[in-house]
Length: 178
Image (cartoon, rainbow, N blue to C red; front, side):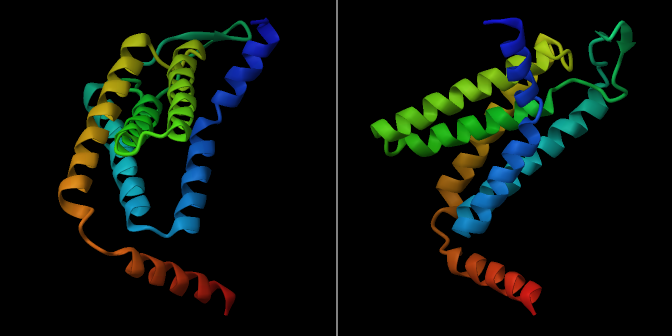
């Protein structure tokens, strides 16, 4: 891969947070499903927990050179919250698709697994995290997704709350148009 293509790819991956948040927000608005709201809340709880762990562990991020100057972020790096978030998304989707593994789902999973690996790799390559920080973040996101999916499957999936979620969204969206 040429240097300019790799740099462009890394630049796109540096916008992962915004891309994932936008896609998730649009999915919530479009589907208005309790499961999507549950997924969004558990994913947010995972990221917030990773940020709390950063403050507890207090492991510094790697020092990097940018334009001949030494750059160091003030925030801590262990565990990587980007890695936790993308591995949460990836693992949760894998759990969902395991129930109905069609060739379309396999293609979606291959794309998401590749995207997750690219995001985790980019965090190290861009100098934001060490390998151990992204491994810890990935494992944290993976673990949180398994717990969240187990809770969904065992407790929340039997609740029929989609109508309430749809009503709440309709009410809020109607307030904006008045």
